[in-house]
Length: 375
Image 1 (cartoon, helix red, strand yellow):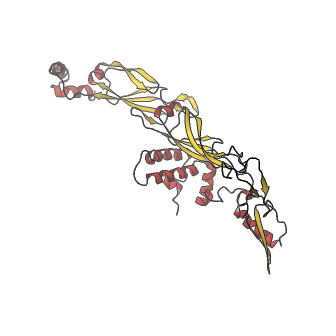
Image 2 (tube, one colour):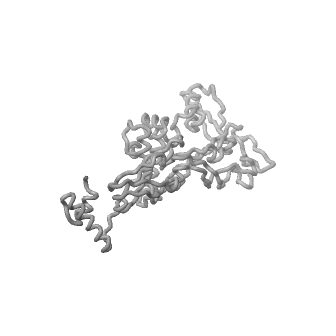
Image 3 (cartoon, helix red, strand yellow):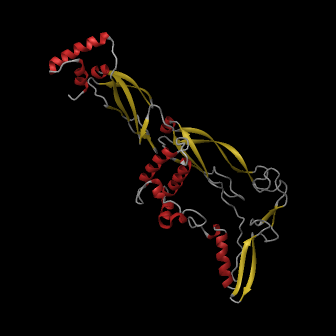
């Protein structure tokens, strides 16, 4: 029995789109095969992606809420037109034409244009690529129309002919009389496999298929501010359609590599900077790294450990509105030395004595506590 998609993502059934998206990103980062090498992680990752694909789209989510798994998979998912339902439509046609005594039978061509399949590609991005976006070249294997036969499957110079077995309908009908009336059984034509046409001489390049596997280079634009799990749709770059049908689309799922220095929290960037205890006491100016490059910051005298400095507008651009950016939040770590030379100790003990005389405390051990403890 299929697991509940809400349970897979880890959200309640009344969760909104943003909550579902946050939960998906957290799980995708945890179970991505490049990160998690534990047995079963890849299957779990696929399961998470399937659940997100359904719950992230309002239309499919509504069908899933109403009909469950049956509403989003299989031939009935999405309730397509009867012309797209293949054999299921044949059952209705056969049943009702039988009760009508064979009246009103129609010839339905099965071999019309068919849209190509959609494709998926998982793409890794470096941290700064996700922040600032840009162009990315990818290679995608997909089915392209055969250039030799232009997708017909017929050898150049020859043409398709109407199937003589089914007269171009793609179907074979057999009428059976019973005491209850005349029933018509409809089946796919075995000669043309439901195409309605047959190839007299197959194209030597594609073997009569009309398509062949090719690896294509594409340049896609990554918008600034993308994150783990962001999905990009590249129109008409999926598999080529059959019989002149339109191509499918390419869906690119983005996964951002971790950075050694920076972390991301929504549209904010987090990092740490380490200063000496003397810099914390006396203050200083430091050059620190940001995603935009080196930036000079001021450390005020008496800065305490874990103080957070904010670089405004040095964070991640908002997806879809790159003019607006988050902030860069830097947590200050104070480096307390474990060993000091004799000259340093002598100077510090003098300072400690002064500090002790003024505060009523004495000793070098109390000195650092007096400096960095509560004031």
